[in-house]
Length: 202
Image (cartoon, rainbow, N blue to C red):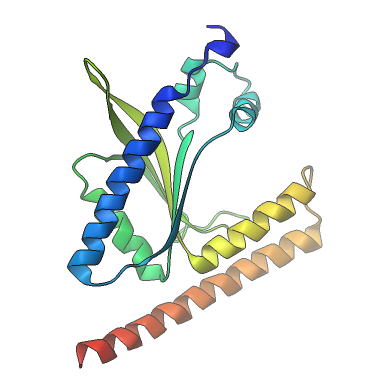
């Protein structure tokens, strides 16, 4: 297959389906619980440059087949929530979807990356309804708290400034800040429990 023949139309369909399905699930969650845990949602289709880079790291050619087999996060959705407990509530909500199939889970909250990165990742299969058949397209959903998202954004900017190797003192500082973020999330989780207890007694 020629490089310029790679088509992203199915990924565009999948993103629309994913946004719609997750939107409905979250609205239903808010209706049933009387509470909207979501601060904001971001979605994207990975750029050609980013896909090429990912394939090059694996010594693979830029072809539609290699993208399909080796780049599961061409379609991405990030859900940022208020509290730590909200992360797992959203995971449970997506798990109950009749349309989205969860293929793989990566709980970087329970098991943070070496850098200090924390988030909950789902690799899912999204149905796209074509004229004569249904296809499933892989996508990645990230669920994280505001604090996790703040750290991840700064970490991304720092790594952009040091593309080859991050200085040891900077790397150590990033990891220490990740620990601070984790403690902050725990404190905010406890605060949320206290607030909920007051509401239950009203």
